[in-house]
Amino acid sequence: MSEVNGMRIGELARQAGVTAKAVRYYESLGLITPGRLANGYRDYDGDDVRLVREIRALHRLGIPVEGTRPFLECLAAGRAYADDCPASLASYRAAIDELTGRIEALTARRTTLIAHLNAAAHRGSGVVPPEERGTAVMDYLTLPADLPVPEDDGAADHLPGTRAPRLALLDTAGRTVRLDALGPRRTVVYVYPLTGRPGTDLPEGWNSIPGARGCTPESCGFRDHFQDLLAAGAGRVYGLSSQDTDYQREVVERLGLPFDMLCDPALGLADALGLPTFEVEGMRLFKRLTLVLRDGVVEHVFYPVFPPNEHARQVLTWLREHPL
Image (cartoon, rainbow, N blue to C red; front, side):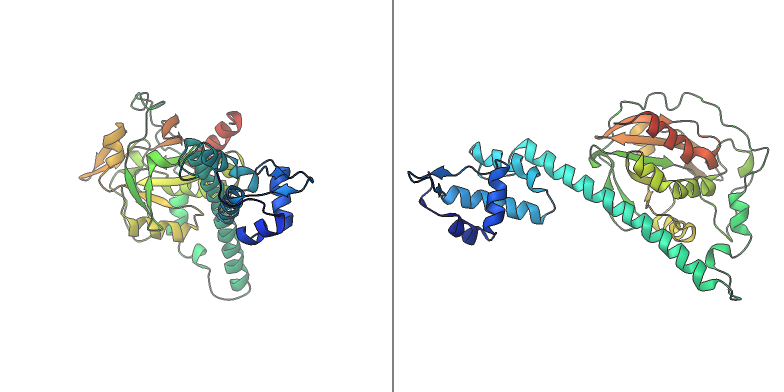
């Protein structure tokens, strides 16, 4: 039982740091239920103060007022903390996923604005924008007409339904990403062998290796369809390869990607999940495939991937045909 009784709404609001109007709103949602005095006036106590303070603190974290109910029910169940219950943790995850989606959408808009700014700034001048410099970039974007088609060798058949490993990978923003802790929203991870870059030769015979050529156009496809993928239900998009962070960061900046790349130089994901790989010039590289992860489980796999420049549209079609 609370030690504070006979409190009016103004006093409750003052102690909890909210307005009386907010208290009435919480009551209308059934989040707090005051007692009634004989004269009909509301009667609040210390427990109500704690509940209102909890609502206020959670709302400041970005959780909607209506979404605080699991936390209040946790307190009502006798827990010492409002987030001691599974439902509270689920509410945290939902709020994090919602914020992640907003951040990624804003990042995509920022990238588009930067591209428009660069184009406008260089329009009518003799300076060539960075994205148009050199012919090497265009060479990487253009796929040979006789590119060999990779065959489905069954190397990915075991993946659907497999749990993601507790593998922590560094992304190109310097953050650590746990593939088993990405939450209930779908995460698209397109895995590729090696992105070409201007001034760097690709391995000898690269075009003749089925599924090797096309990493740059594939990434550009995911860039161009990024907003569509989010609208179709993807919570995140990542590219993943065995190149180091500096190498991939250059790719992100040069191609104007609105998402980050994951770096796996040790091919830990390949070893943990049994992903197909191949060797060329002494390098072990990922074979091209795409994972759709949800709740720490591989929901769907695209393998083999062909043509790479059309793959983002293939993923988009699947998302639209399999809404959550």
